[in-house]
Image 1 (spheres, helix red, strand yellow):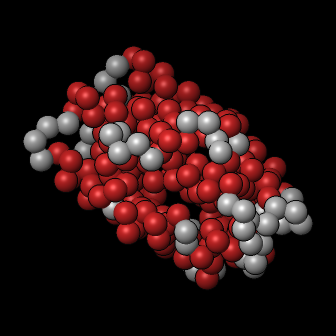
Image 2 (cartoon, rainbow, N blue to C red):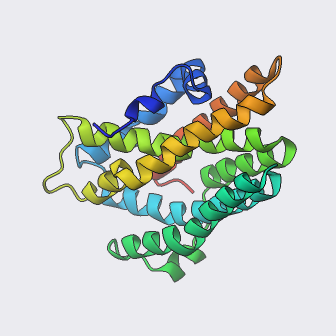
Length: 232
């Protein structure tokens, strides 16, 4: 099991409390048919290619959200952390994504020109809206299902004895999100939520954050649906 995976299950963290409060949505997200069929290698390749194309567009808006996190941050340390993530997304992760997609016969030019799916627009614009309308904690709670959720899903697939790795065309995807580099990023996101909560939580704030977390998780489910059913 990935080191410190318990961070994602710790009920004393803000993330743990949010996950427990939204356990139905969280479970539906983490064991979605799209995820399960990645694990058993039965996901149609056209569904995965559609997902990859939309994920490229998602990463563009995800980068905008991290740019907003720089603006919303209240300390220089948090500004630098958000700027570092933004730089990694724009100058490293997107290049890796393009390289990975090339193995699936997708070019960057093709991905830039495709129509953005409704589920993609709904999710990315919701995250940006929460960051614009709320504070930095609202923004990071809206980001959490993606940042932390993919680590949870990757680890679950990698450690599940029923997951097929040999001959699985999605093996690299599983290993990427189960890998220590991404797991470390997700653990950092868990701790960062607690740091923000220490100075920004007040009476009645938790229920508002639950609402944001539940909506963002539901939109993640919609993103899987979009990929599975090749929706635009």
